[in-house]
Length: 91
Image (cartoon, rainbow, N blue to C red; front, top):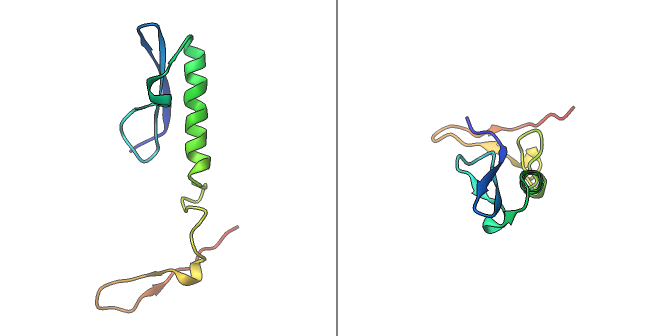
């Protein structure tokens, strides 16, 4: 199962910040491989990029994207059978 993570990778002349997104399994470089002077700076940049990804893509705790239409418009379609209406209950 994929999980979000950040890391600082030592390189020649500094540290490279990398993050692993929730829906991907590969590590991605932050700021196109920009080198940071310290490991702490690289980790902070990676955490900021991960936070921007989670908040900027409108991923919310329920797993739905924030821009989705109301549940009344949604339905599950099965070939050859009636569609099942979808109801989302929020606490």
